[in-house]
Image 1 (cartoon, rainbow, N blue to C red):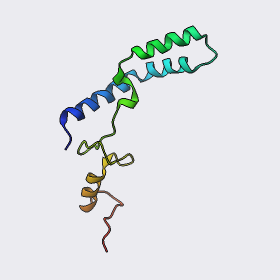
Image 2 (image 1 turned 90 degrees about the horizontal axis):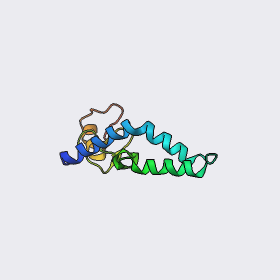
Image 3 (image 1 turned 120 degrees about the horizontal axis):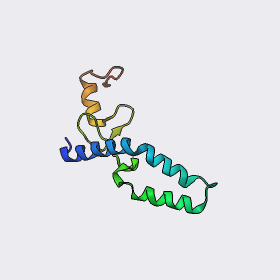
Image 4 (image 1 turned 180 degrees about the vertical axis):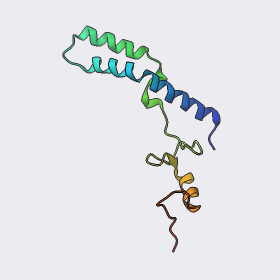
Length: 101
């Protein structure tokens, strides 16, 4: 089980990304638009850099929904390999059977 503080910090980041997404996307589109004057693009770039760091999507870490483990994460199932194996062994994930021979 991961530290609760790490899990909560990541949850805070996810909420901040969602709340600031529209503003960051608008500023990013202005910066990328080559038809706009250079000064306007520079001002948008400065505004984007003044946004909180945790509002950037790259700061969010994929974590297991069950244990909070950050490594060995399966995106499709939103869980770590260890939690996946435990649930598959008990037959709680439909369509997955632990092999044995």
